[in-house]
Image (cartoon, rainbow, N blue to C red; front, side, top):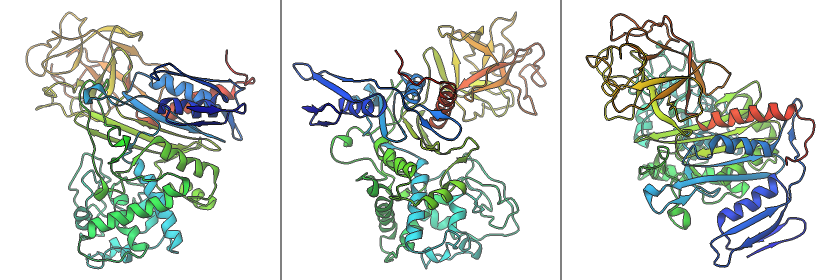
Length: 574
């Protein structure tokens, strides 16, 4: 049952959670709820609200309509990802969700709700940064203190490691040049932070694909003014924070006890002050969420998803399971400057020094994104303080793919060709061996899409490359003979134009091998027809790529901020 008064206040009991979501969503975004009706057998419901004039959130230079933000965000995402949940807030907080947290491939299917927990990957770094700032301040430890005295006494630390500061870790300026895309267990951290440091080295910053970096810690290197992203910088806080807070050390079962204390400290200082309870770096084990937390999927979710499991013993850089309701409470507190998590001065320092955030932009906003991929599935997450007065969060449980587009096309780092990665083999490369694929997931439209461009681009079943099928010859294939387009769809490629940040231009046709290749590099890549690719006579093509959650939030903000800034009448739409 539900009770609604004439001021829009409401009380719900045991109604469907989706209906309860719309109560809050309508109340915060459109206008007060007027009525809810249930059908006779309780399987259906209708919520009605009164639409009131749109009241945008305004800063010194522009205004942003929360209503239009949601409208544009849903246009971006509905039926293009398996499921998502989002929050947009200003003076009031609101949440919205759509799609599935568990698809029919993992029966029973479960809806993605604002209460759905999902592994947020590297958004966990922002959570750890909040906990660190609070715990350090509470125990009167400066951000510029060395970390050496807050690591286990039986760790044999190099003096250069001991002198790394908390601030350097939180801002990725510690001199650690290893991305750390490995399991961040206690033993891994101990081995990494107790290694010998050669102060004469200046190792370059390594990406996520590189492991076992030689001389990965260079705290005195000349380029440490530049940040170098590393999971080690944040995973170590699972060890540091308990010792800052007075951990009663005992080598017996130390890894589990440290992890449990880190979780307690983060709950105590980040989540519980804003009313988010039982938040952990593992999936729920009781209640409805034990069977309804989100898996990660490959769109459209026709194949089973990936369960990321328990990350308690690796948490810090990754691992936290949050609902959009959980993170919205945290972001609202920061946005309001209410002091429940950080004081205004602490938040200002966190933003200006990029502690736990990915980007400080001139627009201005701060943002932290996260992404996990396994077995072809994807989770993408992002949180942002757009400022002033507006925050947003978006959690997606799959890659993004519009109708009549095919995802899983990737760039080959050796030959520059566009290659389909959804086959059993990456295909033969003109540079020798198999294609070495980059991480960007490009979206190639079919002729059934509404994309205007050049048709008759075809997939080669032998080498997996995309090649033009409208020439007098299919072109030389690196797998031998000519390209074989049997079984291929008819793809259409658009000419470059526009300013979208989720597309890439400078893709060109090679007039020798017929392949679509990237020309925005110094070396054009070896051609299977001999020599390098030849782009003479080619147009400039543009490829969209599957945007991550941070790109969707960023594009939506820019669309809405521009739209509202030009708008003088804020009356509701018809």
